[in-house]
Image 1 (cartoon, rainbow, N blue to C red):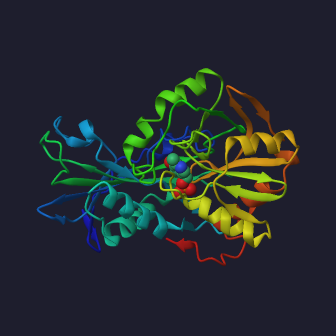
Image 2: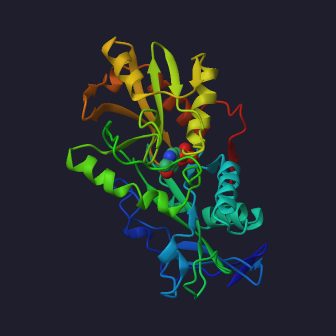
Length: 354
Ligand SMILES: Cc1ncc(COP(=O)(O)O)c(C=O)c1O
């Protein structure tokens, strides 16, 4: 065992890296050699430890399993064109994690555990960052209630874990989204903008119905009027209407996507007008009928910038242009990728060498 700063490190005796086919990595099923674990007890975070990736021992009474007091983040480490590991806007994920923690009545995680832990883990498992195009090391920090008690109240103890997965593309094909007016993902005053477990479980029923119809995921509408576009299960949404990029405003019910924020900034850099505002499914349908819906795409860490090729609903199907005929989404993806690879200037200070 060795110590790095405050972090105890126990290295694996048997790396699994030789077993991995980096050209064919299924998303989220391959885990790097190490993980970080830290416990919160007696009102304080205890020293984090890096240990070989493996199972945790948990009590069946643990409130996370019953009431879902659990939050997480999703971020990526990339290899730049010089082969060096870099993080993208890690501080923004750190800030969002702690906003989620506050909303779910969980203790804030200190920077020395979250950010230093991620950097240490990435350094240790640096060989797990794929070199392949469209590939990266997905980083999954999570925190959950770990009491041995089934009372309905915030836990007194928590576990914070970071594990990492080499990943390729999340969507290998352009995405097809199904609009539901029946189910909602989040409502005003709820936890929609927290990155908390229950938001995802709550979406599965409608997502399954979308998938049964041949769609990849749901395009969620607002919980009050069932008209205004919110987001998709894994991505924030953008629509290019007559040359203007429109994205739903941060209403309290959608995730404050870091890719969304990067996309808004880069689109403005590219002199594309961006509007953050309410946008209804009727407006999208009318724009499509008038031949003015130039593009629709999703923005997310896992999904990057993913073209949406079809939007289906009980009212009909909107078929969109293929990627090859689009200008804005592909240019945005290229700029984002070039910044991460160090091939375009990082004028916004998003990149951090690990
Ligand atoms: C519900 C939801 N919306 C949007 C996003 C995109 O957020 P980000 O760009 O920060 O990854 C995600 C996550 O990845 C998500 O889970």
